[in-house]
Image 1 (spheres, rainbow, N blue to C red):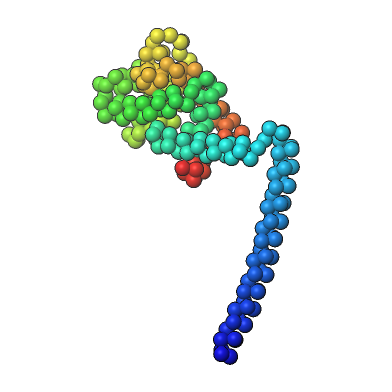
Image 2: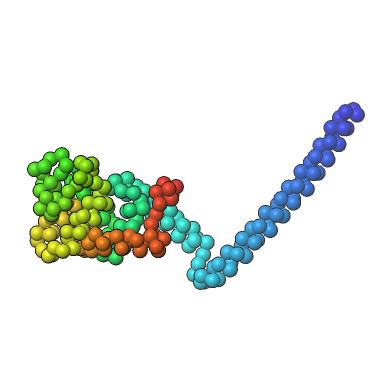
Length: 213
């Protein structure tokens, strides 16, 4: 009986202590939530009355989805997310859609392989007519970004017309015609725009894109 009373007494002390800790933790949590609410109210007031929690959540969700999209697109076109997001900015300035950009780059990668393996293919002849090689001097394949810059360097000095459109479509597929305004920027123009994208914080790192995915 004495042992039973001792156990009950110990439980009472333990439960009392735990209850006190629980209440203390609850008060701290409530205080933290109240502080967060106050800070959020200040942010909302600063950014405008139209801001809502739902709007913030939607904005964050959209950003994550865009980063995830870059991760998947970079895998399809064989280009890093850093390079692709920089080109996306350049494409936006040239009124070229992301869809046209990714489709064109994917087709370019295919044609680079075709040109390297089949010297008489349409892709190989298009590269030859433009004076651009899909390979480096040591025989290794260039990246699609390098070839895009080389093609843009040639396009910048070429007259617009049927011949330029035909070559663009031979290299970039159906998206070739849409990409001409971007290609006309030239190698230096592309470099300047991608550098500006980096300065504006618009370049997405591979790690960030993978985390979003």
